[in-house]
Length: 395
Ligand code: AMP
Image 1 (cartoon, rainbow, N blue to C red):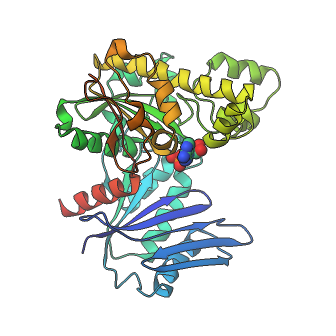
Image 2 (image 1 turned 90 degrees about the vertical axis):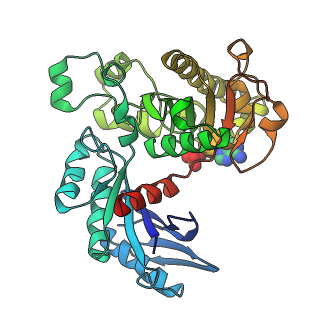
């Protein structure tokens, strides 16, 4: 009995997968969306069965009831599937959660209390945790934090140079995100290279709708581009990434209010702000047809990635491997080539045919004689959450 229900909840949606933690086989997966709206939607896949329903889902409690119903309708009730535990992805664990944690009432309260640092995410996680614990009261529930992997960063990497009292009072420091992805990808990269992770200096580039870079020394995160929030760092689908903090003051003084500024930076910036689309495929197609704004957007995106690449090459004292992952990183060969261009002096040599091959598995895209191994490694956050949950409950 090693089936783990992995839950990834947002304010109006719950994504879930039932994974056999030992074999990593997907037993079922699904999505409940538009929670709280007039009409909600449920999609459930289990074996050959596929269920799609439109029903009102007033809250997360109703959403879990709907998930359990979907299992029963697909032919195998969840009780028969013998779920060993539920693993919940939690975006913000602050400084206190440095490892997967068994959820008690007190832990659930602490996750909610961290909402100040993640107002969009942690309240939704808390609601889903309460509902899931009520729906499945007899199994352990485990929180797996996106921030935990980065708790190994040294103080000089996580400290912002502002008044220390203000920083302490408001919890202002670099936490970093995408930690579950950076961890699983760095381990899979080491496995592909047949080297112990403890011997490797790795730079992982998680380039999806959200994007972050991470410097990993011997399996430990020593720096990452996202900060207090998932807004800092690389250019993303709708998020700005790095910006002079003075620009925020300038916009506030010019009459923009805080909520408008929040929407601007989180929802209307990045590729979307520069081109009108947050989807890299659209931007690439527009650039190919000569659209100057789309070309510039790709150049700005590549420049930001290369800036972090340079910083992390120095921070790590060189690199054994550079790893691309997530939607853009796994699929956009042209972007990978642009990121790795003119780095032969540093020992990076891409093999164009390997880079352009359409293969879904983890693979090397550098030449055999490239001093730095450049890899594409698909991320799998759900499998990692299942693994960590299983490890905790069987320890
Ligand atoms: P993710 O957040 O990891 O799901 O990644 C989403 C991003 O991946 C979007 O910007 C997509 O445009 C991009 N993406 C997905 N498939 C491709 C592809 N075949 N080529 C280029 N970009 C892609």
